Amino acid sequence: MESNDRQSRIEHLPWTKLGDAATWQTQLPRTKRLRYNPLRESMADVFSKKKRSQVMAAIRSNGNKDTELRFAAMLRAHGINGWRRNQRLPGKPDFIFRSARVAVFVDGCFWHGCRWHCRMPKSRTDFWASKIARNKERDREVGRLLRKRQWRVLRFWEHNLKSPDKVIDKLRTMLATRTKQP
Image (cartoon, rainbow, N blue to C red; front, top):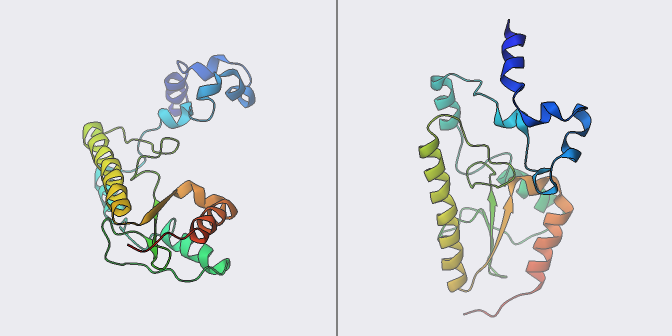
């Protein structure tokens, strides 16, 4: 019964008419290949409302294992020194390099609206759309304010941390080119 219900829910999706499931991505227009995932778009929440509320409340604003702690481990592994956390600067950067005047933010894909990985919840869509839009606007404002104060801002997405060499190279390049102190 449940498999028939699932089958009826996905029969209307465009990728079901494309033939071999392994090649459905290659048959989509080039602009939609990486972004379009029909299974992701049709998923319902697996938790009850109460459980989802508990899960979301448990997400911390700092010390997140997927972002900040992973980035800190990358810095240690590559021998990059001189960084600090939890410093008083506008926007509360995750890491700062005071001598180079670099502020680093490691943004979670959901909370900061990554165009590739932010999957909006199906319920309370207006609330979530406005919340993520506010987060994105605040990110832009904080970047402007820090640049006005002669800080250079570097932002990494959570998914960028899967390629540590690229992240570290970008950071090292930024640290190597120092700016004048105000």
